[in-house]
Length: 282
View 1 (cartoon, rainbow, N blue to C red):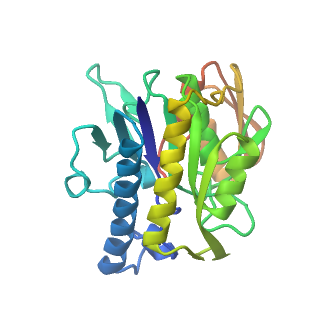
View 2 (spheres, rainbow, N blue to C red):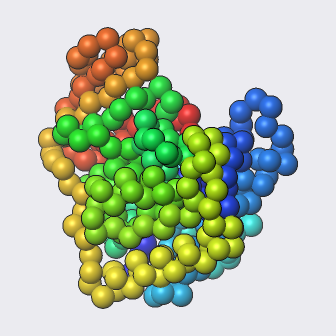
């Protein structure tokens, strides 16, 4: 059994401040950046160990936060059954760029950890969808965040979303869209840039239990349906400014709806990530 652990950072256990997650911003000190990265890596280790202990034969860990570069694979759990991807894209042998390397039809379950709620969500910690310039992202008329976008991409390969870990708002979002998904809420927002919740160790333990439960369900044949809303897929992206819409309008297949909104028709779910690629704010 193979499981794919796709990691963001805002929802990691014990990480409660904006500076710890968006540590590249001006004025954030190196000690804060290191503290955030260590919290993330400790969570990665706890989840990976739990997946293996529960019976996974292979675990793939991919860092997607800000495109990756937040984890140090050499500092993580050394186990030949774990493959680490420190960046969310890779160049294949034929020269093509591949989002979420290793995610394909051989994967049994997709786990989104360290995740957060979509843009505009009230009572959420650092809510956004890919970029602070994105106000709303819709697939076939349904508003989704990064959780839905990434689950849709996994659905192209027939891989179901089985677990979401993060803040309470992100977990509510996941449960509303995917009723069969397990959630691991490890924090709640005090306001948009500050959270509180389980201590890092408590979060690791809770996350580990949920990861083990997700793997056990897969082993027992309790496999949710993959998220396959199409094809074709109509993707609607609303942006903060007309200038941002101008930039997105240049992408293949895009058409302008109004000053701030661009629509595209995609023939394959695999292409959904072309609408999340590019400079990521967080």
